[in-house]
Image 1 (cartoon, helix red, strand yellow):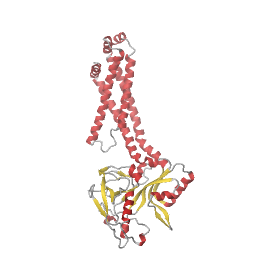
Image 2: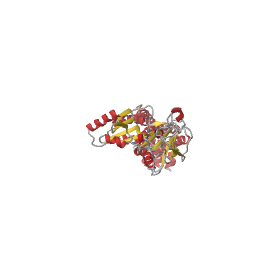
Image 3: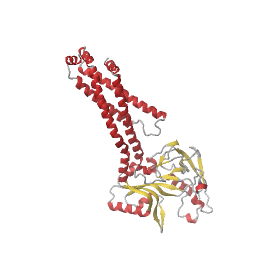
Image 4: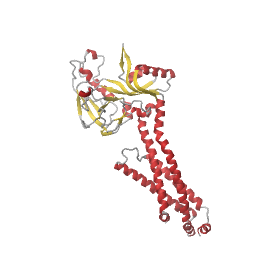
Length: 440
C-alpha cells in the first residue's frame, strides 16, 4: 500500500518529477563522459605502465652500436645491451630483415614490407585491436613455422594462409646461397584498421607521454606501408633451426649465421634495478648518448608525470561542468522536494491519523524519490547501451563500464540521501495538529 501512495505522489507532481528526471539524466551523462575519457586513456597507458615504473630511460632507437672485436656493430639482442649497462633491464622492439612484400611495393620502393619483432614482455603487455585471428604469443612454440600478424592495406592474405620464405635481401648478396628448405610463415592474425601498435615510424617525440610509443595503422593513408609483426623469440628459433639444415654461408657472413637478421630499432625501455647508484645512472646515460642514435629520450619519471597529466586533462575540463550541474540539480531537487512535501502535507496528516507513523509518512516520499532516481539511472544506462549497440558511439570514447556505473550510482545515492534528509526535517518533527493548521 505504501508503494501505491508513493506512485500516487509521483502522478500528482508530473511536472516536477519530469524536471528532476531530465536534470538527473544530464548529470549522469556528464559523469559517464568524464569517467569514459579517463578510463579510455588509462587503458592505453596501462600496458606500458610497468615500463615507466621506478627509474629508467625510454627511447625511440634508430640503432645502438656495441663493440665486436675491432668494429662497432648494431646491437641485435636486448640482453647484449644490458651487458654494457649497469643494473639495468632492457625491453626492446626490433627491425627484422625478412622477404615480405605484403602491399606489392618492393619494385616501386626497393624495400620489403617493414617487419617488427617484439620481446616477450612487450607481447605479454599489450594486444592491439584485431580484425581477425589473434595477436602473437610469447615464446617460439617449438615449431619450424613462424607466426605472423599483418597490418595490410587490402585483402591480400587471410588468417591461416601460409607464406613460403626462401631468402632475404642480406642473403641475396651471398653468391651460391640456397636455403635447404623454404621457411613457412603462417598468418595468425590481421590487425583492425586504426589499430595502435607499439611502433612509431613518424612524429617521434610528439607528445612526451605514453602516446609516443603507439602508432595507429591507417589503411587509407597512401604513404602507409603494410607491416608484418613477429615474435623475436620465434625469429631466433627459426634461425637456429635453419642453421642446422646444412646451410652454407658466404665467408663475409660467417661471423653472423642468422638467416633473418635483426637489430634493436624503435621503442626501447631501459628500467633501472633497485639499488642503482647515481654514478651507475650517469654511466648508463652517457653510454646510451655516445653509442645510440635515437629520435628522443625521456626518463621514466617524465613519462609518468606527463602521462598522468594527459589522462586527467579531460577530467580537469569536465569536472567544473559536473559540479555546476550537480549543484543546480540539488538546488532544484530541494525546491521541488519542499513544494511536493507541502502539497502532500494534508495527505501525510491523514495517513498519520489512520495509523501510520511520521517515519512511515516520510518513507512514502523517500520511496517516491527512489523510484524516480532509479528510473533515471536505468533509463540513462539503457540509452547509452542501445547507442553503443547501434554504433552511434563508434567514433567516441563514450561507453558504459564498471566505473561509469559506480559513478552514476554514487550520484543517485547522493540525491536520494539529500531528499530523505530534507523530508525528515520538514515532516518528522511536526504534529498532525500543526500540519492540519498549516494547510488549512
